[in-house]
Image (cartoon, rainbow, N blue to C red):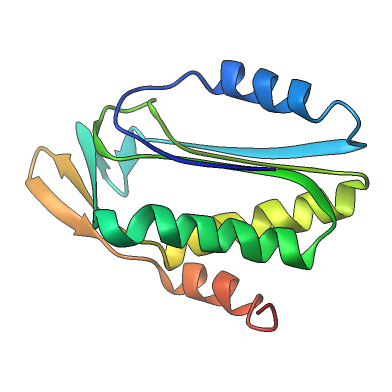
Length: 153
């Protein structure tokens, strides 16, 4: 089962996880990651984060990524929810969950999904601070994390 969605409004991660868990009650483990808007970026306070995307590529790309995880690990299900638009500090940005018979598969698949969503996704991020808007690029560490998965087709 694959649940991939772009979300334009705030969502309730607890509710989403409860529904995902109920749909996969036979799984031995469910691993999730929730990404939230930071209150600070370096030495500046963040007022707002904005994520833009290119519609014709974003959802198909997220679905293809979920399919790669499903093909590589024996998963019962994958959920990948990603916000777009403007968000405030503390708002949920991304929720990834993987259900599997064994925990290691769920952990690895969730890590794989997040590394790709963080570094090679179809989103452009910018944040607003007292100094104004600035674009956010993946860090060298993000690219190094992504390189770990080069062997997965």
